[in-house]
Image 1: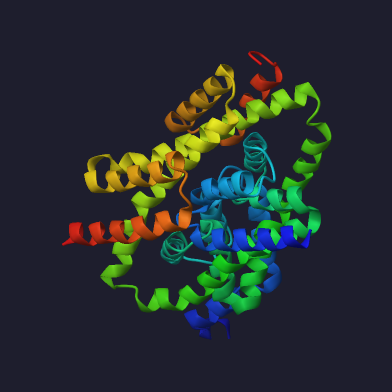
Image 2 (image 1 turned 120 degrees about the horizontal axis):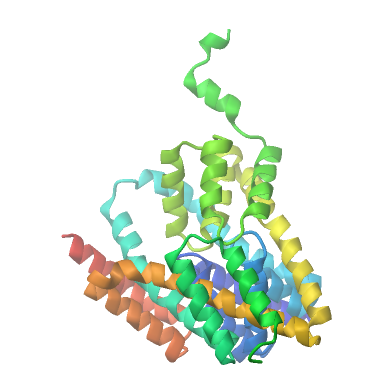
Length: 175
Length: 189
């Protein structure tokens, strides 16, 4: 149990500092660690937890809390949350002063521009891996494709799309 | 006497207390479905008037630049700016307290009901739709790169390394990020 908590602390404090461009960039590494390295759950269950977290309110990385709780109960949840949110928050506090001081330096903009393509590629990888783990049937692939298209083309609230996907799933059609 | 207040004093008068910071972000955390950013702007700039529109954009720029979720960093930065470290703690704890409890409630529900075929089907549909939302977000980030061949190439390398070769994130970022920043600085000159 203690070994598990230590592993959770190490994994998530590392991920905390690597989460450039928001949470979704660390999904693939989280999945690799949780599913392939530590075998805490199968890939399908990881996707189910991701989906649960998406259906809940709040910032988009609540899957972290859920993984900690699923793997090691309340202590796991606590350790994982502190490990995930602590280090990046300390960096934010430290950076707040420097940010104001270097406001007009060009390298600040280069670094900001430079991170965009890296983030874009990794978020695309996240989407591919999550879709692959979530979609085992043709109907599931169809739900994913239609949801993506509607979210791109319209301003429908994401919660309606999640509800629609759940309802189509509930009919059991194609499973 | 009120007329003698300088703008600094009135800013001081509006400075939110720890309780207000916690409460403000608690409310934000509980109502933000599918991304808290648009709601964060409305709450902080338009409703509570803790930040001017320029301050918000500037702080958000910092938060997007740093590791960690944008709104999570924003809760830390806003709390820090008004009340120092206790304020930063009040901000982030307020933001994640509500969603943590909700998500664990959903987790309990899932564990107790996952053997029921109806529930399994429901979650299969939910997961498929969640994957679709993630794809739409990836497309939105990728589209602006289509006229920038070098940036698109770096994005493609990142995709191949993570999704196909399943390489760890740290070495991938250590190679691609400096390369990408170098390309960005060359293009700017």
